[in-house]
Length: 346
Length: 134
Image 1 (cartoon, rainbow over the protein chains, first blue to last red):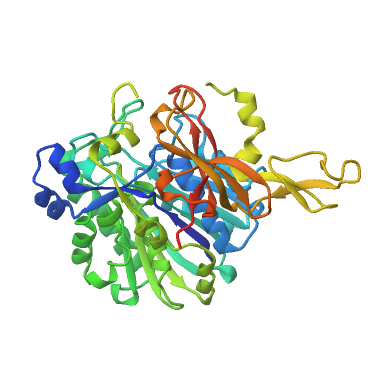
Image 2 (image 1 turned 30 degrees about the vertical axis):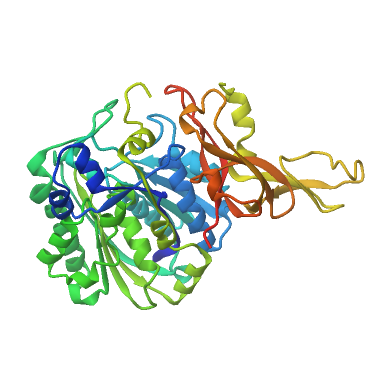
């Protein structure tokens, strides 16, 4: 079996409140906050992008794992906001953490679930003995069209996971299961600045169908039930959907709160469920069991069953997610628009 | 000011991860890396050294009249950072204004974009520093 040998989370310092965005577009701030369940979102500084966020998370993962970065045999960076259309983010990250040149590296894209797809690829490589350690990163500085509902929720953040053999793992990945279909809920064409969404496809045919089926599929595969788990992390495009899907699956609210970060940092896309998992690993005890279900539009879900081991004490070697989530400075709309390059001609 | 691609490529090890050098004869640390120790000369034993990235603010200033390509970043703080091992380097302190910085403040290296204003050009990445939260 394989597991998580190290993990790291990073969230940029700047935030913008939903009410500040709502005021610009003439929306009712309370309706937005209560409707979407997002109070504020994390905004990358103007010298940050998906690559720099990934590097910060990766460095913490290396510290926690206590391994030389040269031992990484694979590095996958999942994002829908890769800085280049052509030129891998993974090579930038590999070079910045000192993992080059003996490794395989590639970029992944699957809307909000490219990070967990990378974890599965690393599980395969480590499990088959092709590499000793593989790193999977979910990172995004996603864009929402100004004035669109997405603008309130698209946040910035990253989480990195080092997958290795179970004996060294601070959490063992017991099993994984995926559920994938072609669904027109969300897309961005090549060269387009902002994504489009297929309105009513977002909810039941997109998020809920895939998250529910992946979760139930893995429980069935493992002969497990909701009661076997101490924490659940569902992909969190807003603050409302993960709570709603938890209710459908009979998961009590207290089991999802620790891993629900979107109300405070927004939907960090590929970083979303991986950051939620990092926040849970920061507090979990040896023996705790964690269930993670990601979701990426287009659409698919990856579910993971995770068991925390005694090696969780190694988490003290790296900064917790809360270090970054609690350090914050609020921006006005104009500065946010500058940082996110929303002005024409920039 | 547009930076050349070969220059950026050559500097990747020091800009991306603070790879400098150490003289094993006098224990002097150098950043950027030196091939010859200026103190020990031919007796020096110079080797590559991976700096920890921790350091302190030695001096700083706030930039209001930036070089070309940095206009959208002003005001920003530039500092001389004394690395924990002893070498000094010049770099930006991110996510702050000068009112938030004091000489002696503990900082750590972060990886950021240095230049990216040409939408079809190369993105130049490298080290900057961030205050360590107490």
